[in-house]
Image 1: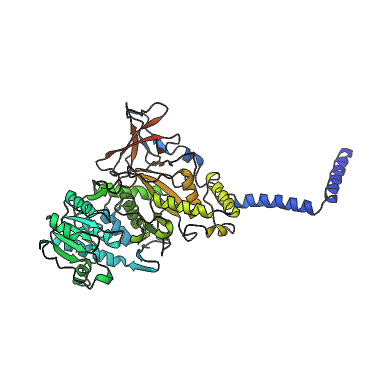
Image 2: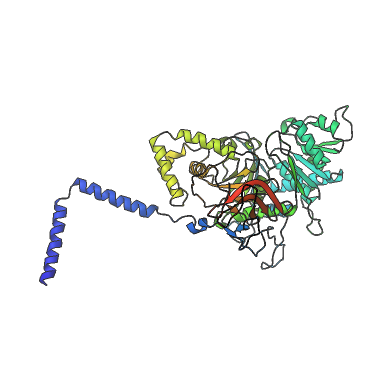
Length: 567
């Protein structure tokens, strides 16, 4: 008992001495320490994904052929299993345990108007289709009206002998309607890149053998085409409201009278109001025809014409849906804005994926080619955006110039640390409200996901991982960076949804293949694969590739984390 008494006496003496020396400085130090501990505990968040999933993002085949690397696939599409070829569409009455059809463009629109099918609070919910005009005027298009236009335009063009339909329009509802009309009425859709020189338009019409053109007045060289392209049989003008009073059906004298000219508005209004509301029956329909795309590497160069089957496109759509984690997938609460041209299959596949997911879609022709996100999102607050690397790079430069104050720089450092070290997206707080005013013209808390893509051979400005990290902080959105090529519908590879890492690079990696592609590197005279390093010309195979295989003509390397990058 004597020893215990001594211990208790010592403790009592120590406590007495401690509190005997207590003062305001001690209180401040203890309070600061407790506050720091409480802050760390209350704000601690688990990483968005396990670090080991980022350390090995693709699966290599166990063997490789001479002169080639191993074949790399997404972890979600392991070797021995088929690549993702379709949407797994279940017909009414089919067992939920049975394998569904791959589907095609017609199934995408049927799903868009049917609404969410899964049981849950959003069952039956459908997305909206919007057109943004200027900064304040937003027009909503009823899905039933769009279905009617699909039927009436498709019937009109087919009845007039249309077989190969060239679509020369900016991003718009009419472009989408014409594409679906071709799918439902067994015509070949040819999507031309918009705002091209007259000789380029004429060349694309000749190479694609188009007999019908759907376009807008003022952008299409009608006289030159009629004089120099006698195969044109039908022209449909998409006229805005301000010009609808003019007579657009007249063919100018001296240009020949073999072209049947009509306007979109006349076709839609000439039919009875109750006509065209029901889509063609699914039973007995033929498979949709190919969709022809023109890939332009750079302005002033000859466009590469690529024919994609319905299977190529639907595989690209399915892979983009599957690439987003289940909890983050597009849905009725999202507003999707394609700020890049729908003539690019990457943008087209994402837009179709948004429709199939019953997300709302907004079309803004001014946003296409816009150099910054403030212009692209003017008049609307999207949650998901597709834009170009050039637009992101300009937005990054302008926003970085605004971060001149000490407070802004330190807030940026704190949020970057959350991304790169803790693996979590920064969340809104009282501190970040000061930072919100420096964001690039986007409403804070709205935008959650940005898609962008490197176009092989198109001299796209490179985006480093550091720039992508800054943009995630600036916009408050995750960014997916993809590698796209002429003969690949959608993307060949793209960065992971939760990959926020920063490396010492000038050009960020492109992540792993999607679930519909596999990638291998073939030896070149200068670059050969060894047992320790895979490098060579990038070759992509899969159901989304025209001809099932395409060499991209650029040299790549597989990094230690099994992601693809330029060499």
